[in-house]
Length: 273
Image (cartoon, rainbow, N blue to C red; front, side, top):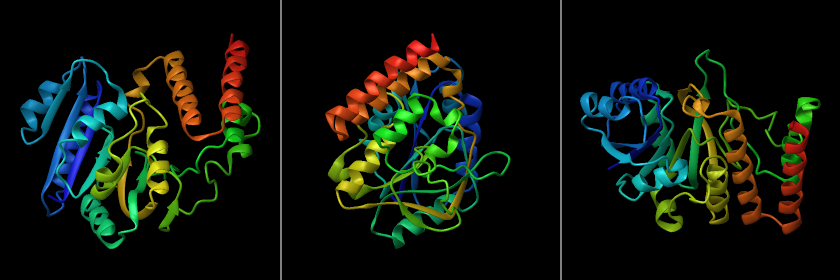
């Protein structure tokens, strides 16, 4: 089988329906399978998938397991040569899947890759990032970019050319294609992350193992951005973000950097109050 598509869903039945419909309307001309891993949605997600997309392999979690753990459940069952982690609030365009798979076939050095993402207005979503450093993350925590946005130019690769294929550090997890050999060597995503930083962590692992992280404009998809997460309260979002950032720095960086961010978060929370 050429491709396994894994979609983790949480209370976005309407957008998921559009997503699945776009996949079946724009079939790639090769065998593929689709997993929907539902994180205990309370809307009509499960019923909708069962009624309208019987070909989809539906996995129902009894609780919200987060992004990494839910994806890993399906990754263990996936049979595809490539595994595509796809957000539920995406829309596949004609030839998206074919072009992306063909591109991966031609670029064996790519362990993970993503494509050109646009929002519903047709604007390019600038999703390429450098690996985080303590300095840019301190700036984020202390909200310095609110006054001096240019301090993040290096981190967000402000001058990146989205019209050209390039090797990058990390890419957005909304459209995240992984080569099977990578899965076989590294396994799935690190489950210590509930949400945020799991794709950055995986890119770091893949790069350390000798593969490249690549961006290509040869395929294109529409990203409605954060439909599931928009339902989460602001304070809870911040907690997830803080916890994941600290776990990432505890895993990959020096102890003083982790401690600096831990204290910065404490200061930030005091200032907010």
